[in-house]
Every structure is written in structure tokens, then in C-alpha cells.
Amino acid sequence: MKRLLEAWQPLIVGILVLALWEIVVRVKGVPHYVLPPPSLVVGALVGNWGTLQSNLAVTLAITGAALAGAIAIGLAVAILFAEFRFAERSFFPYAVILQVTPVVSIAPLIIIWAKDTFTALFICAWLVAFFPVVSNTTIGLKSVDPNLRDLFAIYGATRRQTLWYLKLPAAMPYFLAGVRISGGLALIGSVVAEFVAGTAGTQSGLAYRILESGFRLEMPKMFAALFLISAAGIAIYLATSFVSRLVLGHWHESSTHER
Image (cartoon, rainbow, N blue to C red; front, top):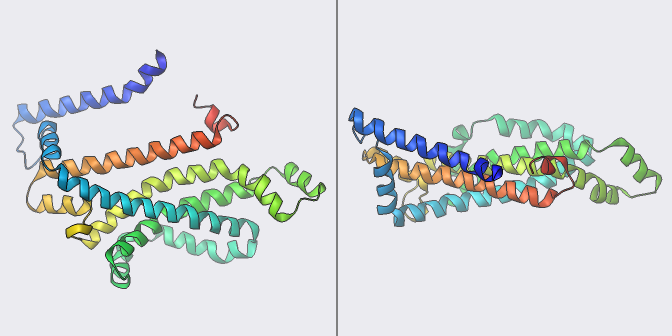
């Protein structure tokens, strides 16, 4: 019963906030083009579902591709950094530079250089999502218990065997934590890139729909698109957290502590 109540607490808080929002807007007579009540947002979401659904699919496609690329390339680069100190000293500073450089500042160049819009948006989102996987996984691979590492050496384990049977399992919680962070960043990167690109037509995502609604003062439609972006971010976080608990199971403290 206690766990059920804890699970419902966020939903109850959300309902109370939406009810207060509705009451304040109607009592104060706030114009709908300034702040629409939740009832109008829901109406706009239902009335424009066909368009918003296609926009959501585009945004999710870019986000999913960027996250997959960040996972695959980030894991490979992290292994390279952890196994070869020369590679880490030579290239890790450039990974930091990519992370701290605002994607908004380089998105116009990427859009010009890329051969199509989807590729440009993918690169922008990937640049944002790439670093957490690299950074967390590198730390995890280098945080192996020295006693276990010495034990593997005593038993004559090869470098590949040590990596596969010791370092990668030990780094898994760090890697999955990086994936959870990168999931949200990939969505942020794709939305920011869409804002910069301003794509329309069949390749337009939710960001373009927000811009269009803002120009037309269709605030309920804008809030509906914002709601879908937030819902997508929550879904990505829940999915990556579920995978993390599924992989870690009962063997790691970060998973058993949540039960």
C-alpha cells in the first residue's frame, strides 16, 4: 500500500497543479494567447493530434538515432580511452570541447555542411548526447578494484579477457547512468537543432510546430507540443531507468537500493 501511494504521489501533485492553473487563469481572466488553461491545451492536443503525432515521430526518430549513436560510439571511445592512456591524453580534451561548445552556435554550420536535414539534426543531437556516455564509461572502466585486477593478472588473463570479464561489468552502472543522462540530452539536442533549422513539411518536428504556433499566437497548440516534448523526455528516462534496473538486477547496490 505504501509503495502504491508513493507511486501515485507525483500524479496527485500534477493534478493539483493543473487544477490550480485552470482556476487561476479563469478567475483572473488571463487571455488565452498569454496563458491558456489546461482544458484548452487538452482540446488543442486532441484537435491537432494528427499533425502533432507526425511531428512527434520525427523528433523521436532523431532522438533515438542520436542516442543509439552516442551509445555505440561513446562506448567504443571510452574503451579506447581506458585501454590506451595516450589516446585519452590526446583526444579527451577535444571531447570536452565538443561538450562545452553550445550546439546552437555550430548548428548553422552543420546544417550547411550536411547533405540532408535529418543528418544535420542527427549530428547536432549526437554532439549533445555523446559526452556523458564517454565520460561516465571511462570513469567506470578505470575504477576497477585493483585487487581484482591483480587477481586476473595472477591467473594469466589476457587484456581482452580482463576487459570483457572484469572492466566492462564493473563499468556497467557508470555506463547506464551515462545513457540515462544522454537520453534526455539527445531529446534536447534534437529540439534545439530543429529550432535552428526551422524545417517545415514532412521533416518538421515538434520544435517547428512550437515556432509556428508562436507566430500565429496559437498558444494552446504550442503548449500541446511542449507537453508532448516533456512526455517524450519522461518516457525516455523511464525506459532507460527500466533497462538499467533490468541489466543490473540484484547484483549492484544502485539497483537493489531502489527496491
